[in-house]
Length: 331
Image 1 (cartoon, rainbow, N blue to C red):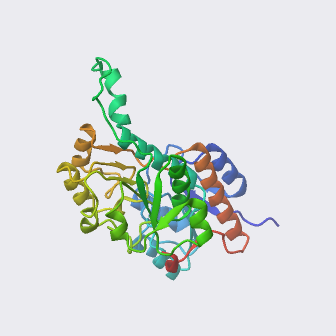
Image 2: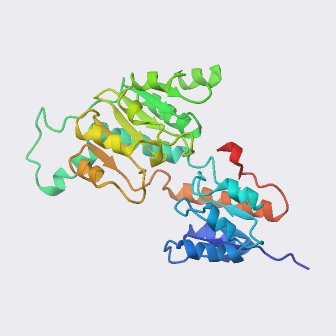
Image 3: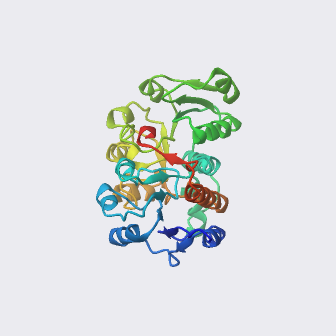
């Protein structure tokens, strides 16, 4: 007798090829109109589903997990992070949590370099001039930005994304520095041509551009605190494609408003999807470039994420430990 397919609830619309494969393998409830599910709708899904597939915008807290049905044994997050899920509470209930790591490094690194270029060379600001009809011709001193070749780039977090950014920055002729909880092996440092700083504070004080590539955990909340932001030099640029909570956004805004920083490129925000109106105003003035969490937004990346989710569910349903299981000790 064929084994019963697990009931899988997906909270948002996924790429068609991913949804089709899920329907072949599992008993799936899809979100065809892509409307974000409310907290109560997710709780109701957790009462009947064997597997929940949330995304990074769905917050699954301890109160919601406490209401889950006994049949829910897997939360297969569609996202590289799991800061939206109370992993500890899930573990206490016997619920396994997985994510989709290792498939978004190149996409996020591309966006990081795009933001470095956009802010340094005023690309977004310049792109609005011609359509507006304001351009009257070339001038030697008009729309001057800053060259990135030869600049010092400080990478915070040297995981897969940090590595990918370092390789791209090297191709642009930048001097690459990094801070990480642990130092890379010597052969990796030589291959990437990077300089390690044990002290984040000391690195920040010497960089022209700083990019952030760490997950949001209790230990990284406001890692770029007000004190550390004030260590940056006035001509420095900050780029964040990680998580908004990693930066003290209010202090960042204050420094940008007062000219204590040259600019910022942000793909994530501290209270996302809400964006501080002061940041929006700074964007209108060309001081910052703001993107709506597009760092991993490629067709290939989303399909790869979906395939990871499917593999985690299938492996779990077959009675094995899923390859991308997340434990509290890993956070």
